[in-house]
Amino acid sequence: MKTSLIVCLSSLALALTSLAQSPAAPQASPRGAPAMSPAAGAPVNPAAPAQLPPGASAPPAGAPAPEATVTATLSPAPTAAESPSPAAEAKPSGGVLGSNWLIDKFHKGGPIMWPILIVSIIGLTVVIERIFWWTGRWFRRDPKRIEKVFTAIEHGDTTEASRLSRGSRDPVLRMMWNGLNHQHASLQGALQVAAGIEIKRAGRFLVVMDTLVTLAPLLGLLGTITGLIRSFSFLGNEELAVQAVTGGIAEALIATACGLGIAIFALIPFNFFTSRVSNLEFELQTAATNLEVMLGAQTAARELDFATKAPAGKGSSI
Image 1 (cartoon, rainbow, N blue to C red):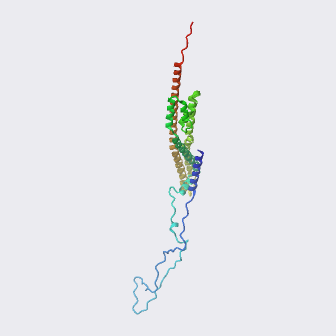
Image 2 (tube, rainbow, N blue to C red; image 1 turned 60 degrees about the vertical axis):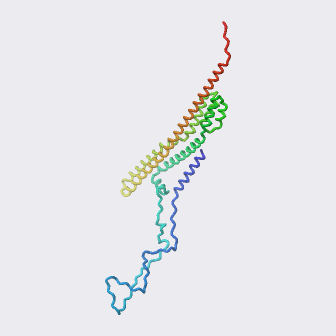
Image 3 (cartoon, helix red, strand yellow; image 1 turned 90 degrees about the vertical axis):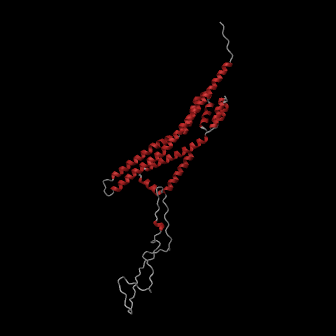
């Protein structure tokens, strides 16, 4: 159990560390890459005749042609820093599951988010530990051996029944072994003690989960109140009123949503584990009742057999 708790806490710490990391910076375009400037036009041929503007008449034949004035716009060669690259323009979108989004919402939730985070870590650890325990309980069940034990008791062989139930990991068989070994002293008391130990093992940490189910919404409600107090405290300042009020309302809503989410997450496995404990308690009570009835019937049969075989006493004469 301790090993599973340590593994769960370590995995949660690694997950939080990975969420806190920022995304990798986009790579810059390689230097020396050719880039065309939008201001650079088509190459000008000095031997080509100059184009006349619209509306101007052509010069008469024989007259010297006016020299064409070529206007060239020189643009400096773009450097690597000035040339835009597609990778630099594309901004990484974190999305709903992005680390930046989670960290940003966590900080916007206010200081009450830290107790909520601690509650969520404890709840997740308890749920994982109980899942492992009940999975092992499922594999430890041995109904065939239980039937063999009851068959041996029915035939009056309590020694064989004790041998079959010894060393088993099934809670029902452990309780039966404890009762068979103490049947001459107090069978009912031994069964009750053994059943209580098994039920306590099965219901471990259920009190913690019950507390978390109640505590998480209360922490969310506390975050709502602190967020509203923060919002109303900035109403007198006209410059920061809108931004501060919206920030406080966001803090209230985020804290409430996180608290309710944790409560819902812990409530479902809490009810499931509680039902499993009730089922185990019913199995233990049924096995204990059957064991008491069968041993009581054998004891009564032995007493009756002993009474019939005993010699009749002689009558006294007056």
